[in-house]
Image 1 (cartoon, rainbow, N blue to C red):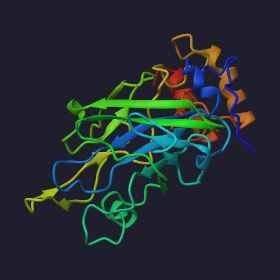
Image 2: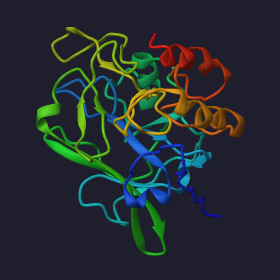
Image 3: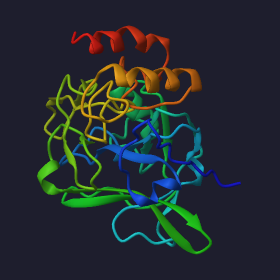
Image 4: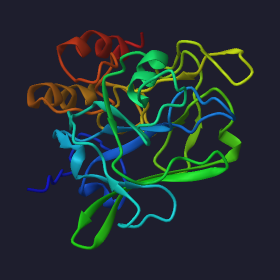
Length: 266
């Protein structure tokens, strides 16, 4: 049975999202497209579940530029809970032959970042610019869920590309210490020099609505008008990026104290 994720509107301020997001409220939030020579790992991209229902990623179809049913493939089936992110490698082949496969190589460089899967088709991500496209397949039709596009201006550097807005090209290179970005373990490039990467695979702390933490009712301020919708989020067990004040991917009692601090201007 196909998963249908309903958009929560009312006072919960999910913000304007692409019209296709009523199929899956899943967004592409980060990608790694490699370096010249030794890349460190196979190309990968991260998706984040911004809805309030667990998603079976095996129902999501992926391809890069010029997507077609004949060339793309479904993502590996993983249970992706609300607010969680998963990383998908575009190839099982490792960049460094000392590893048996790309999973072991990824873990050696980035560590255990949570859910990791592989794409079942679709191309690798080109350093000269490319796109990542996610679809629901309905018969012979590809219904777009989300797209991320990048140019060569964002590649060839040891920083991942992260999503910072609603638009398909609202991106930047990751910055150490911001939005959960950290340094990877070092690896040797083709010149036998030690290289570390910067990114936040498996972690998404951004706000694609472009708003502010705690502004649950979207009036541009954090004030007493946000208290009731904030309490509703907790009691209903719903996820909202603006209500996840402590950035742990949940909206629960652990967010109360930092929410009160925001209310008081702290």
